[in-house]
Image 1 (cartoon, rainbow, N blue to C red):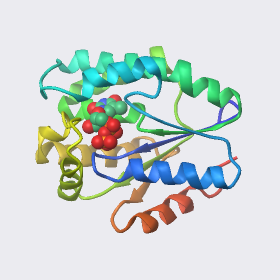
Image 2: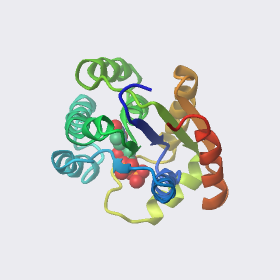
Image 3: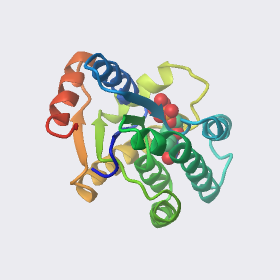
Length: 208
Ligand code: TYD
């Protein structure tokens, strides 16, 4: 852990249940007296939420893969400057629903050779890595069904289809082997309470 707070990210494909779990964990930790900032990507600060709309709405091929990576990275820079680092400096627990691993996995799934660009940009302009990352895994078909059922108008990535969802799942599995020190896989199948219990078990010994 670096800084005085604790930085936790949730990752997983669309419909994995990570947003539900992030919210639930934030509420539980607050009830236990922790000072928690719950945030999300893309977004999490005023400027980054504006960039979010450019990213999640509209045609699936609206941006070239490189432009898309730059937009995600610009949003993340604003998010980390305005929201994450100030909260960590105040000793808070920051829970982010997605962070840089989403760019590695999503943009890397679309075009494998772009993974290096993502990593280089991260090193140059973001720098900060979560203290712990929980990767929620669920089978690709269930995830896609859950995601599209929400009809949120933010389906640009879901609309890339089932093959893409499988690539995402593989990408997240690879993340667990690439960053074994900070990434823990969580079985996302079953009901919300059961998954929440797995989340708490994974956190044991990590929280300050
Ligand atoms: P998110 O709000 O987490 O969607 P959901 O609640 O459906 O999981 O993220 C919006 C979409 O943006 C999602 O399909 C994942 C995608 N995304 C990327 O492709 N790269 C990124 O770096 C991030 C943060 C998100």
